[in-house]
Length: 123
Image (cartoon, rainbow, N blue to C red; front, side, top):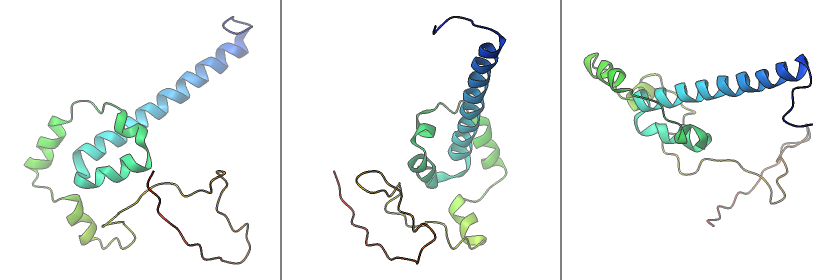
């Protein structure tokens, strides 16, 4: 029954779930810290792709921000321009998932390439 210890296997399963969750929270917290220190206005892109990162507390990054200032680091936008990252969404308007109204994947299933018309609806 739920909540009862029924052997070593269930203990391991519970520990693995806890470890799995802990690993993802740690990774997302580090993404948050990177966004806060280095991505400037582009941190909103990370938050748009994964809103859970925005909700996490990244901790105190003041020493990292001071290091960035002391090293006279350029902005993230300058970095993108310097390395000519052509596929980066400089002037992004919309970010998110595209799906059908019944939440099916928009996949060609290895068939011919199809052109889709996308309409933006607000609400």
